[in-house]
Length: 71
Image (tube, rainbow, N blue to C red; front, side, top):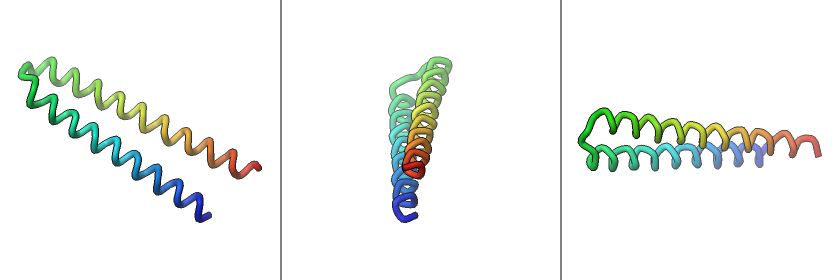
């Protein structure tokens, strides 16, 4: 149980770190780019990539939990 909670905490911390990095990236892009259409496209792409990354991370840990319980 303790290791499970630790893993979950680690995962949520990792996700928040990814989100934080994405926000920094988006802000940096906003200051650099001036064309609104190009900017919104880039931002949505970054958010989409982050979402995929977060989903992959949570899926990976879920699979690890399942493997841990089977053994």
